[in-house]
Amino acid sequence: MAGGMIGHSFLHGAFGFSGLSVPVVTLLTGGSTDTAASALTLLDCPDLDHRETIGFLKNTQLAAQETSSGTDLCLSWALPLPTSTNHDWLLQELLSHAVLHGVRQPIKQIRIGLKETGIWPLVSNRPDVHPILFPREKNDELNLQTVIQNIHWPQKVALVTGSLRQFTEEASRRCCVTS
Image (tube, rainbow, N blue to C red; front, side, top):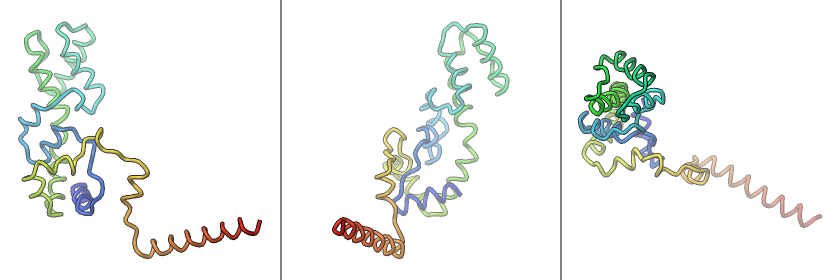
């Protein structure tokens, strides 16, 4: 359903779907897992606790608490325990698991919706469309003015609001003239 909503939104000129990390957009638009994993950063990890624990692996020496949290996370995801020689590799593996592992099924569902709306060929073959369909949050300006400009009112609503606006303007002129 989400893919259909994104597709219809795009087809009707509404806002893109912002907030997805670059690796997730890479997977969503047909890129490989290896390409997505190579673009991962610590900020892509949505779980703040996992982000902190994975971030500990950037340190060359781990405190007892850091080692304990890292060990717990590795054991829960069936990965090897942190050692002095596997920090970089383990950091990437933990990031990949934290960010990409949980999005595989939702990505399949979103792709189905994009295919049903007919925009999948555009998404899969035109990388220049990706920033429009999935804008980076920092580039996406959402404010009241933008929302109002993008509302497409049905004709009846436009007539009613136009009549109401005219009535209000005339009433305020009469009120000011008679006072």
